[in-house]
Image (cartoon, rainbow, N blue to C red; front, side, top):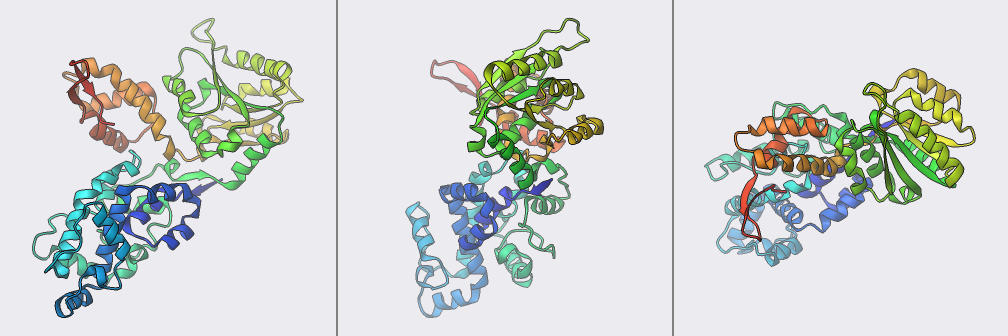
Length: 441
């Protein structure tokens, strides 16, 4: 079972200026994300400017009258957050200006948002099209006559269709709360750009039942280890599981043992760099090119772990039914099986159910947060090509990188990676006075 994630919409809600009490009520499960946003200067700058712009739209005429007839300014008008204004000025932004009325302030806030929003691109995953996010904040040609007035009229005439009534630059429609979940938000903003977002693994995550069953299995064991058949598993999906589980629970796991032959993807070599659990590699040479001995060696090794090292419980990561022989060889051990939907048949699931062995799919865990590992693998592959870049087509090279690293991605994701990292490769002189090609990370 899965639930929809809220990490992306938590960030959007913070940036557009949703009230703190509403943030902490509606996105309580994303407390870590909120804490990072509270401490992020670039995010908070955009948040404060968006709040100012929204309040100015809502109180445009009243603000203008107070400035014009009572000689007031934003810092002494009650509906503006004076602490936000003071903080922005401490950070070097000139907010309070003499002889500025509502229209000029609206232009100024828009200019400052336009100039600073790109600093927040790092808050979002590479697989999200940044332009679609950026367009929610950036108003093009705002200095032209009538552009901001049109946005004002659109907002005031459809305020109930703006998330928590905070202004964003979009075509308002009756879609309910578009920042309710990541799934809904991504669907809406992609459709507004004539595009579609279909990778459900990015906004689906394992539910509490799946997690609690896994935690219960680990907690009830004297010693637990993870055994991975690398031939029949995906390194990035396994990482999504490790990243999605509680670190304190994972700390109880003795080790992860990876069983493979030389034909498996290089992505596995990076797993140990992204987890605190000790990782052991056992590489098995083939007797012939057609027959792998991974299943046999994996069985022998797990049996040894049980009798010699006292490991009583094993999380088996494999979608190959051959691991059933391993389970039958250790009737006193406890097993939990993690598989991939498209690789595992119903027969093995039925056998596990009949023997009371819990199983779940690693596909249920959200893959959104695995981008750090994927990016590291792709960068490593890109570095191998730096000496032969001349004459290469950037997009063709990008496709080659994904193929070599076996990272599954949509065409749009690969184009994003190409635009952000491949096309921005830069020639520079290093500390030794020699030319090197640098990846803009």
